[in-house]
Length: 351
Ligand code: KG4
Ligand code: ZN
Image (cartoon, rainbow, N blue to C red; front, top):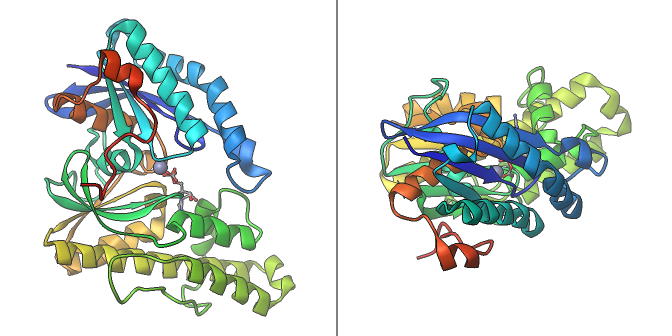
C-alpha cells in the first residue's frame, strides 16, 4: 500500500494530502486546504505576489496537518507528488521547491503532476460520494472547467490528455467571477451566482450563447460584455433589487452552463466516446451538474460528476494522479529530481 504525500500551490489554495494505493485505487487518507480567500477578497481577485507569500507561510503547517490527520509522519511516506504547472509561477515555485526538498532529503521519488490532468483524474479518488455513475474507463472525454481553464480533452490514460477544444479568451470560472464582480457580489463570485440564481428566472435577461452552435472551442468575453450592457441598461437602482439581481445571476449562469454542456456533448459525439467527466472548480456549480445530468443520458452519454470537495483546488487530486504516474515509472530521483523546474509536465495538446 504505497502512500504518497501530495502538494498543490498553483493558485490561491495551499493544499497537502496523503493518498494511498489500495487494491489499485487511490484512497484519500487526509486532505488539508488553506484558502487564501480572505487575503485576496479586498482586491476582488488573486494578487500573485500576495498569493506566493501566503503559500510560503502556509505550506509547512499544511503539510504537517495532512501528515497528522493521516496518523503518520514522513517515515510512513513512499513518494512525493507536486503540481508543476500550469499556474502562477511564484506560487508553483513554493510547492515545487518544498516537494523537491522533502523528496531529496528523505530519498523518496518525486512525481511532477499537471494541474488540469489532476482535476480530471479526481473522479478516480476512492472515497467519492456516489454522485454520477462512478469512475469511467479509458478513454473518455473530460470537461475541465475552472477559474483559469476551460478545456475539453480526450483522456486516454491517467495524465494522458489530448486537447479537443479550449477557451479562446476567458475561462468559464473567470466569467462567473467577473459577472459577480460587475453585480457587486463578494469575491469569489462563482458560488455567489450559483446561490443567487436559485431564486431567479433563467430567461429573465436575454443573453447570448457565444459560439454554442459550432465547434468545441469556447469564448466567454462577449457574454461578459453583454452582462455589462444589461447592467447599464437596467439602471443603478436594480443592484439593490433582489429579484433583478437573481434574474441576472440565473440568466448569466444558464448561458454559461448551456454552452459548456452543449460543447461537451458535441465533443463526446465527435470523439466517439460515451463517458464525460466534469471536473474543476466550476463543476461545483449546481446548475451545471443538473443540466449535464439531464442532457447527458438523452444524448447517450454517461455523466461522471467529480465530488464537489475535489472540484476546487486540492492536493488529493494531485496525489491520486501522482500514484498512477508513479506506477507507470514516472517518479524522479537524483539529478532529474534536482533539475525539475515548473511548467515541465506534459501539456494536453502537446505531442
Ligand atoms: O479549480 P479552481 O479551484 O481553481 C482553478 O484552477 O482555477 O476553480 C475556481 C473557480 C472560480 O472561478 C470559482 O468562482 C469557480 O471555480 N466556482 C464556481 C462555483 N464554485 C467555484 N463557479 C460557479 N458555481 C460554483 N458553485
Ligand atoms: Zn484548479
